Length: 196
Image (cartoon, rainbow, N blue to C red; front, side):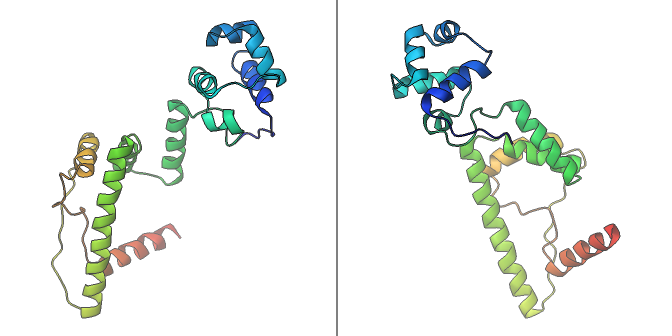
């Protein structure tokens, strides 16, 4: 993460002009459909840009509007390439399988509404699983495994499945793992022992 010192409004506009193509005031003004004197006034602090101008500057130069207005956060919005690099770093760090890569990529590229719906759906499933496992452990009753098999080449289906789940179309499908808590714990401990 880069460090950006505290700047006033004029300094932030100058920073953008110099760091987005090292434009002259005239070139910068032309990009925005403004006059050179307006840009000069903004940079020196003689004039304060109205909100619609700040919004336009942020849009044209792909900036974080909060940073441009208040100096909060980072100036530049992440690009799709940044997102892909961050995901790839995450996948490598956690040694993700192809299924995990497909699942997480599809999840993070869902629109906000669908992602929120899918998260709520998962929360309901896992809350229910935890409650059921607590009951089983307390009652010490063995139960059948409820298992939804995952096909080997199911990676292409993940975006469709996630979207369907987010929209409530998969409420009767349980997660494709055994619900028996003791088996999950044993498997996790065994895997941990192999790595050590």
